Image: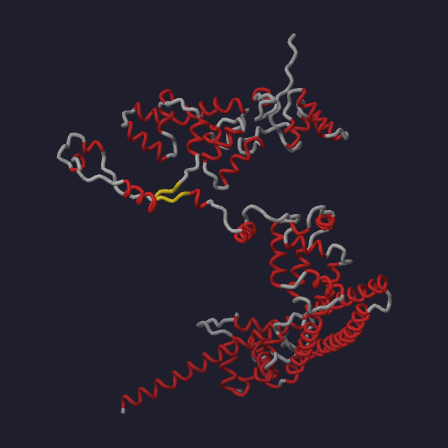
Length: 592
């Protein structure tokens, strides 16, 4: 009885055997971890055996170690050419825009048939030594329909044109007649870089067939005029550009600029390229020597640079691993890039990012605390305006009467009607339409005000702060105060650490303490203001009888939307009313 051959797996290299579809068919649909051919290798990994040892075992047993990269919970699937790690890079080169000839040259240099690029990327992967066979099979399959066209009597030229339209090489029809040219040499010729660039005369060339037998054409006449060598030299000088001259060395200053833009690097980069460039751009805008920046940061001077630049450096600052690489750099520091040299200068600055956060806080605290104070005061004053406005009160009471009349009728008792409504319901006025026409309840309210109480039409004049206050988000006020308190705590902690390092008499720590004391007083005042605002909110909710868990900004927004809609509808009503008055006057004038 013959011994069963070891299981195969798909591979594109020449070191491991090709997968056998017949063998895989038996285990089709079975997860890899349960497949009798592969389960033991996943079990080895599960039991703690090192992955290299398992891969070595698989190679010994003629199984592709790439199987371990597949999902063990899924059945075996033969990877496509584009998915095969051996070939994936070449398809990626095509996707990035490299010419096909360049990629073919790379394939030939790597010992892989350039015919790979003529295969369908979704074709199941094949070993390197089977690419040409796969191409021939693919070629025969593709040209089969074109051979049928020829058998049916279609002209050869038409068939070749169709092949070109489909992106198929017409020479595939007669592969036996194709010249056996060494592919590597052909690619080398195509990729040979010319020494010069010539201007082209884009003219229309006559066909030789049309001129054959026509001896009268002037193109067959002999001319007595010959081009002199001077003319040829002048032509070459004027219309031909030497590439060697274009590649001549540039001045050193230009080379440094070119290296910054992506040419040959003249500086050593230890950071991520994008991060390094952004740090360098920030430092270029500051235009202060690195030594002075370090001194000012240690002295906690917030005027050394703007908060925008400070925040940029905080966001871009290298992590612990990157800083460790910069600290251990053994070479000449002057060979480092701008960002790396700056980080190297700051390498021994204790708690660099904490200090930068403190500098940002010292810069921004006066402005942020003032804006927060003014915003809280704005909301408080708006609450006062709304609660004191008699015209707004009368408008809302009029809306209540109209709503009760609409919902319950004229004969309804006082115990049956609604005692009030939430400000969030004001939006319904523009959404409630009459049975006849498109008149909304808001339009009816405007007409009623104009007819019965025209003095209420300008109620918005008594609540002039509402528009600005409606844009204030109350939760953000508390978040901003909390952020200021967090920055204050960081500032106090930094002062304590400096005192521990330098002593309690350190001037920098004393200056920080002084600023922290002043900011603490401001924060205490802001706490009082927010407490007062909470009282104003309760007053506002009680005044309107609001029962929901509303924030002031929600009710402000609803009230402002109603105010804005009322103004627009009222303006349109007045224009319509003015036009209706002018029409009878014009008709009377015509009759007279």
